[in-house]
Every structure is written in C-alpha cells, then in structure tokens.
Amino acid sequence: MLKKFITVFFCFLLLLPCCSLVSVAALPPSSDTHEGIDVSMYQGDIDFEQVADSGIEGVYIRSSLGSSYIDPYFEQNYSNAKAAGLSVGFYHYVTARTVSQAAYQAHFFVNTIQGKDFDYRLAMDFEDLQGLSVSEINDIALTFIQTLEEIGGREAVVYSNAYDATDIFQGEITSYPLWVAEYGVSTPRDSVNWDSWAGWQYTSRGQISGIQGYVDRDLYTEEMYLSSSGQVTPHPAMPPSRTTNAIYTVKPGNTLWGIARLYHTTISSIVEENQISNPNLIFPGEVLRIPVEDRSSTESASIRYTVRRGDTLWGIAQRYRTTVAQIAALNHIANPNLIYPGQQLEIPERNYSAAVYTVQRGDTLWGIAQRYGTTVSYLADLNGISNPNLIYPGQVLRVP
Image 1 (cartoon, rainbow, N blue to C red):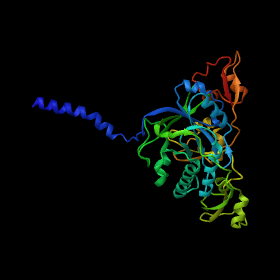
Image 2: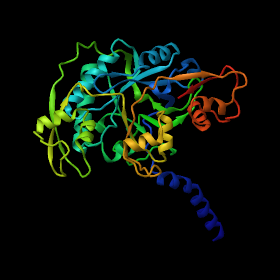
Image 3: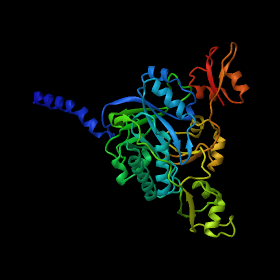
Image 4: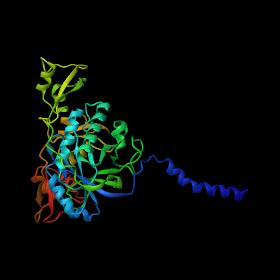
C-alpha cells in the first residue's frame, strides 16, 4: 500500500509543473524572437553603431504623423540605422477622424518612405482614439491598413496597447499581425483579440548604449519581417484633399474649442457648418456635423498617449520632455496622482529638438540642473544616469 502511494504521489509531482503552465494566461509569440527598439524624435541623436553593438538587431523608425507631418529625425535615423547594419521598419502615427482621412494618411505614409529600403512590415500606430466609437475606430483602422498595403505593395502590422487590442480592435483588423505594447509583465495577456503576437513592446524605459535617456524596447518575431526586403511601390503625387463630415454628439462638459481640437479643425468651420449663432452655447445631446479635411490645416506634432498599467503622470512627462503641470492642465486632470489604464492624454506640443551639454571638469549634475532650470532627478532620468554623483568630463548630456 505504501509503495502504491509513493508511486501515485511521484506521478503527481511530475504532472504538477505541466498543470501550472496550463493555468498561465499568456499570449504566445508567433515564432522565435530577436531584440529590437522603436524610435522617434524623442530620442534625439542616436549612435546606431553602439546600439547594434549592444545586441539590438532591428529598429522601427517613426516616419510621419497625420496627413502632413514628417518626423524631424526620420531621415537621420534611417540613414544611420542602415549604415549600422540594423534591420529597419517604419511606423506612422494615425490621427484620422474619417475613413477618407485614413486613406489620405496611408497615401502620405507611403509617399514619405518611398525610395527607402526596409525589412519590417509597415506599422500602423493608431492610439488617437478619443471621441470615436468602437465602430468608427475599426473602420478607420481597416481603411488605413488596407489602403497602405494596396498602394505600398508591402505587408502591414497593427501596433496597439493590450487594452485597445482587447476592448477596441476587433473583426477584420485582427487578421493582420499584432505588435502589442504591454509593460510590467513576463508575457502579453491572452485576452486580446489575436491568437499570437508578432511584436511585443515590453517597456518604454529601456536603456541602450548610444541613446541618451529612455527608449522603447521590443521583441520581434519572424512575422514582423516582410516576405522580401525592398521598397514600397513607386507612388504618384498625393491625391487631392477632400472635406467630409464626421458626426459628433455633444457630451457634458464639451466646448466647441475642445471638439475642434479633437478633430484637428477650427471652431469657425464647425460654427458655419452647423449655423451656430452662439459658439459658447452648445448642449449635451446636440448632434454636430464636423467638417474634416483629409489634409488638416490645423495639424501639429502633438500626440495622444494611452495610459498603460503602471504609468504615472511624472513618468509620462519625463518620457515626452514636458511637465506634470502641463499635461494635467491640458487634460483637465484635477489629481495628478490619479490616472488609469486606457485613459487618453494629449501631450503638449513643444520643440523636441535635442539640446545637449558637454560635461566640463568640476561640473556636478546639481550645478548643471541649476544652470538649465531643472532638477537632478530630471537630468538623471533623461540621460539614464543611475548614479547622479558620477559624471565625467566630455560626457554629453541631454538638457531641457
């Protein structure tokens, strides 16, 4: 009897690890992975030779935003990343509010990157979702990505945080590979509307030699690669910009100013289209027609950021080189300590060109902070400095 019990107990112990693995709700990668990063103007000047020497194999570069904005570091990042032998991909930040505008932005993306050789799928970064219904979001996303593949002649991938990939994106858009952003976990959640991930952005606070401050770190699978490296299909001139109407139902607390910013349009155009006699008087439930130009005349470099689990307003401010007070004021946040996953924040527009300071003999981080009207902690965070008491002559620091 004892021998039988011992045998059964031993079998139970052998099976226990398998049972534990089954219980973990994890989304699997589509294949083996390699290390990558994604960059934009926020990283400033990058030494891609050092990046490559750090074990990074590939980089996604932001090429463009909206219908007319080209990232000021796009050309520089592309040339230097290629020279360093890294695999390269491009992503576009979508700001569309109508399907017509989505198609126009896809044309702009292809037009921006034509003539350049690249290796990864073209990525759609659609986070600017505020004011749109789930149906509108999916229609815009699908129009953008279908147009992108049609005119570009290259495969595409959907970039999304885990929240939107679970609760927002659905239907046909999920037939495209997923590049998911989820931080502070050992593997992405399996609740998203995809069966696997092609790419995983696992932190926004990565530190890599050759980059001052933080950078997004990623794992890329083989599915992120194009079927063959090369260029997009040669693209003719941009199509003419059209104006279409979006329909918006006024919510409590709305103002025409806020609605105009949401749709990248002007108060006067909304007033004229809806024959509003008093622009200061709109009421909840009122249905407005919002004129939306394919090529927005009020577009800027400002972006919307979707709060992730573990984010703080301070951390977001550090990432985008702004202040907690500016983000709180722009987004009407009464308690800066209270933000929640999935919340959409507008990031204040400013000049993100990198200012630098070369450390001189006798300098301290405290003294440099005083000179530039900032704090030691801000400079340390911006430059990825773990020991604020240890800087050396000749070291190049990013400063506000």
